Length: 294
Image (cartoon, rainbow, N blue to C red):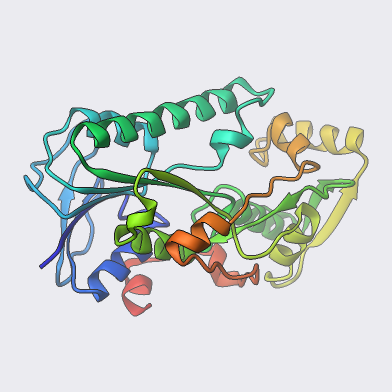
């Protein structure tokens, strides 16, 4: 029986990936900081990259669905024998490289160093590595952008945006990302490659937010404000402890096109992401029972 070791298996991408592995007959060992419910074929180990539990000495594939930089540091020093590695990073490696926000620039740098570290460690072990870069992730109620928009809009009954928030986006569902990772395991063409994984539809930021709002009951009002007024509203929200989590750099990007080419992933991973048709359930946190039913 094929054996997979999964980091980030309790996360928003990891859970649907575990389901695919189990349905395909894999034996899966997954690592989590918190206790998890075991299933037939799935063993959970308690720990993280700073306090790693005792792992199998050898597996057929190593999958990382969590922070790339932490995985890269661990993988570079590990003794695990594994011929195949598939790890998630982010398109933020490109998007945030020249950001005005130093924290965003640091994230881009850590992603780049993580990718380089994974590839170098894999090459030194004669292993085949593939890196996956999602765009705007949604679908499990655990993302920091669309789910946060849904929750804030529900609380306020409205959601503010600056006018001309027309930068293009390609939101991608977690199940499509899990499918891409699963396909990558058996794709020889993906060895040594990195792939952008955008969603199946490109739409303006404003229209994306409208579709999120339309899933809610009652439907919140989209309020478009002139930039000075929007910035003032954002500052007031932060002062009153009701901040949106948006920084100035993120607001500026609302008017910037962030579009990525899916063709390489379509060619090598049979990647076929869905269009953006959100439902209210996609912005609710999923449970073990939900995943078992899928």
